[in-house]
Length: 231
Image (cartoon, rainbow, N blue to C red; front, top):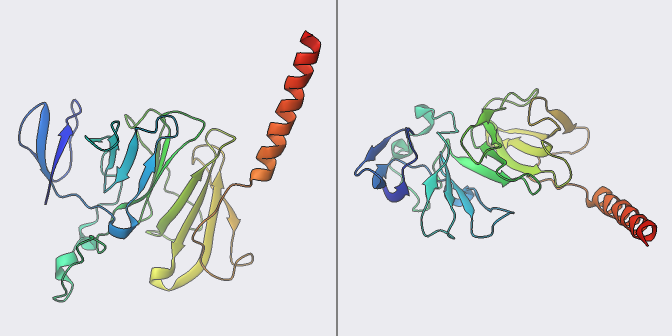
């Protein structure tokens, strides 16, 4: 168990948690941080705000001094995948590396404030556009095996609602690469890399900056035109 200090959101229920006091509370929770793969990220609009993942999304607005949980359990919460102590007598790693059903990715949008993508090690993908008040499940991705690891999500630095996603399934001896793109907040996913492009599984992807540079150059040309016209 972990004992943590949080400010309790109004009318919010946490799975497997016991409230010890009322407003600013000490709670005893069965948290599942991802060990060596725990998700952590900085808010691009406020460098004092950071996010951390267990089965919940945790948010701190004071560089980690205090934390608030801003999501429900975003994993499958499958108890069959939470039997670390039944591992045949092996001592569990102090890092919690054996934990499953945990959040691997927290990706804030660099162009849309309060927009976060979240991916888990059991195939779940969610997003929020209001800082965690509401979450939308967009885990149905055509061609992706159920319960695959969502290894990476990269929010577009050009277009709202657009993101790149990497998933892999090699832990079940499936070495097929899975890379997808959405342009509509996960309503649909287009597969952009498969076994014809890459010989083994994929781990990471990055948005092409060439087009971004072209957009900047075009914008600068327009600004120069406006300055000339103004003069």
